[in-house]
Length: 303
Image (cartoon, rainbow, N blue to C red; front, side, top):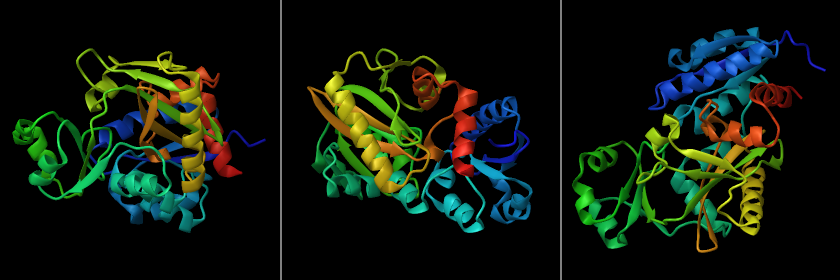
């Protein structure tokens, strides 16, 4: 058994577009860990890795709670791994592949995981030649902030799409598949109950709907056959293990006409840990409340 007086450093904040959500997750993780008896300190990664290095030795373990590029692309995990300090997270290289959506699409093609047809784009004419309807995505975006649904060429002229294409990033488009969205959490080598996502009527599961509380997230995915759910769990486990994503991850899928399409897999840094987040809801459906969930993640890191 571990001492309940262990000192945990939560790394959060940073400079990404998801700084605000990172703080929300971090505050809830901090509250839960303190309830379990840990001594917890928050560190804003905006202060930089040099400041982080100065204080690392004061803690027994590190719990990064940073969504977006800084927390998900593997660089922070690489830094922590080189420090030798136990941390809640994944293999740095696996995180890099999972976070960069273009690298992940290539990974899916290489390993024959079912994913929507896609193409890297350099200019708007590439999107037009790919065809509509389609989904435009930035390779290093997160929380659906850098995603646009394109139904026709007219959508390319909207301010939101122009803003996305102006980012310092790479881009791709994929087929727009209108089906049932499901997500599968992986915790300590096993799959959690499949969660079905129902956005508000007329909407989709974008950044706003993820955190507004207006979407429905239903454990055990009542609209999806057991066969498809088992397949989604199997694929999620395979990808998680192959990429070395550590103690937890979450894979997102679409289901249409009995076919399953893998959209992406979220590294531990990309798995939300707020009251509105999908992963804690899946854990709860498996009988694991939030304090026990985060306590368990720390204990796995310390083993």
